[in-house]
Image 1 (cartoon, one colour):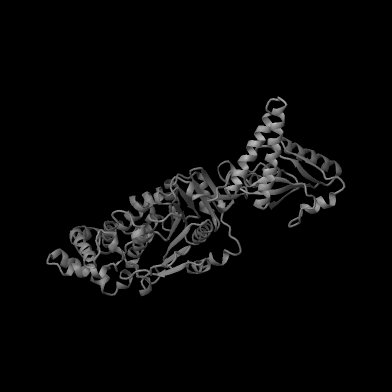
Image 2 (tube, rainbow, N blue to C red; image 1 turned 180 degrees about the horizontal axis):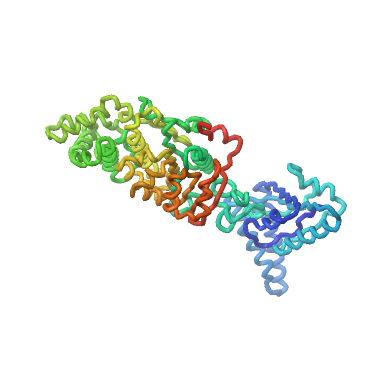
Length: 537
């Protein structure tokens, strides 16, 4: 038998129909919704407000006291009309139908009474459509149209509250924010689990798992879904695993180490998008880069000479603190090396010799170049390191971090940077310090950092690596190697049950830790996403 909901409560919480979908009996719940055109919605509300106002004035003319229900209805209608005019919400015609199944008439009657009692507990009512049971049953079939037409006008928020999907893993109070993305399904209840990095204390996440546990699969699904919410994405890709994904979403691939993939650490922003001290900031980025290339101790000793050479290169190019001069071609690392070689200071001469392989030698393809101007920023930019030798990978990653950091400081949209195999960057102390500064300050500029690694030792084996891990508000742990399990258990304060789960977790299963709790989940993807997610399996 099919019931049609005829009365709705005045106020509900999200997922108020969860009791019906979770009821231990066969019960089909069908929700039919159709948007009302904005002009039609505005006309309906105007007529309703006119009727309410006419009734209020008629009562006042007769000397009657104000009816609180009429006043409340008029106020609600006026508020809803304003929200529709501001495009903050829309109206829908919605019909809710329930089909109950049982083996005997007695069991069916009992089930119907139970369903009506559940609805009554929420201040809702339901009736069987007399003489239209066939059409009512057809209405609850998958993909069927509404053949009953027992509808009610609901706004967007009220309609969303009728979706019978909620669980302790869905979000606070069962609500799902527009910026949240689907993380997977609960490994315990099968309910959807959502993740909202933009609602956390910081926007960073850490993905930690042994090779083959599904680390890249999870990182890619998270990235794709963030792109769907309007976030601008960037990836530091050591092995070219994200190139196909970039092509699928209309992104761009920059292959570091090739002439077309050179980055210039001294590149300045457009004068209209610049902030104070940009010139000094670029010189500081150059100092960080040289600390990776030359070693922290040697770079510190040569810091004055490098600073003079960098400022001299800017002056030789006609660039000063005046932003009007920033439209001129900027110097590159080769120009800095030439300025150092022109000096008479022994430190400058030493600096010029040390920079020669990177400025004019065999490694110059990474450092001397600029990205084309006037190109619209794509939704996803992948920086692949597969053409870089291992010795230059930390420097290449640092160049990308610097570029993304400077872009985020002058942009307004949310951005997400995914660093795959971040252990390669954390091996260098200067690069690790840059990542830590990045992780601590990214939230100020609506920037989220996603770190994925399989090497627990390099991440947790140093104070800097541990600090980077602690600055991730979202920590996602996949299956762990037996040798690393004890360290992971101590570092993330896991219970015995959580430790056992990670020790035996199948591929694609993970433990997600946020400020709201811990959830064991299974990562899922759509058929359209699948072709771009697998790596070597």
